[in-house]
Length: 171
Image 1 (tube, rainbow, N blue to C red):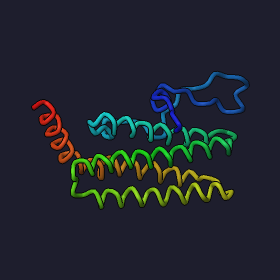
Image 2 (tube, rainbow, N blue to C red):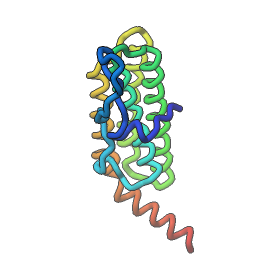
Image 3 (spheres, one colour):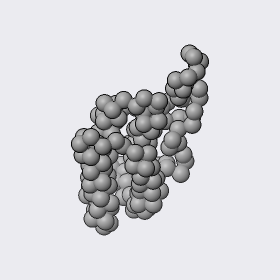
């Protein structure tokens, strides 16, 4: 799995200086997709995984925005982003099964739809196409929508189920 440090997903990271700066220092920059409180669900394992997906999205943006993007790096990051998302989906779906979440099929359909689109993007990249900033924007929009709308919809159920599980464990 690709692991991108939390620092790379924060405002304090450094962007490469443009090629024409004659050795000037790197400059601070804003991430393409900042982690915000709006993305926080309050479920530590899920939030950590979402942070990693945001960090991978930022790493892909940084490489694509470089003066000379390295195709091998773009491929590694893109593949890591797709793999990490699929593993994250499995974690959520297992959690849903453990607690008999009624909306599991609808949520899983969202995951499957994203996986198909992401795999198509990866297949086209492997076939020689470049990853466009529009494709990157799709990854960002999908992740924000999925966390803020689709994942947030399961929170009341999941909080209650996890509280019941903790209460039962204490009994």
